[in-house]
Length: 226
Image (cartoon, rainbow, N blue to C red; front, side, top):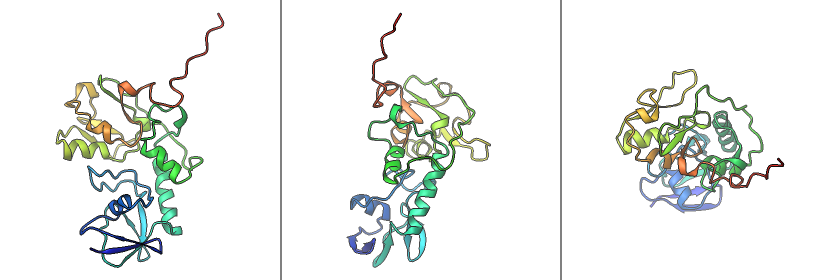
């Protein structure tokens, strides 16, 4: 089995053909990653998992571990690249975690914000000019919170093979599309729910979680003084 040296002194045995990010996750090495999901494989859209190997930056999600490989996850170049990549993601996502319905400890964007010690957004958030889609009874899609990671598209296209979801990158304001732009409730979506389970933020949310899951969403409103 190939042995990989990580951050100068830690050595880890990798399985044949194992990706660096899977090795890190298995070995509890904290490396940010947003678009990667074990069920979906490397999508390679976010660049938050960039690490340094032999003086070059590589995506840990798509790089196979090799014998005698020396990897730095915390070099100045790697940390700068990870933070820059995440800053670009946050340009598509407003950090309002305190009242967010997905603030339940399982939000990848929230957890990555903590891991990278982000205190404010370097790239100002700009909402997309689309309405929230509530037309499906089981889940809703908020384009302005969508980070365009492609997880949901990968799940729909290549795992479930429903081929309903896509992203038209040439649009001025890209978003996830159902059948090229139909309302969810009018599309070919079969409500399998896989897209919702792999969403790394609150862009896709089960309707049963709305106004129930966040830390402050369950607070009672103060009594009226009338």
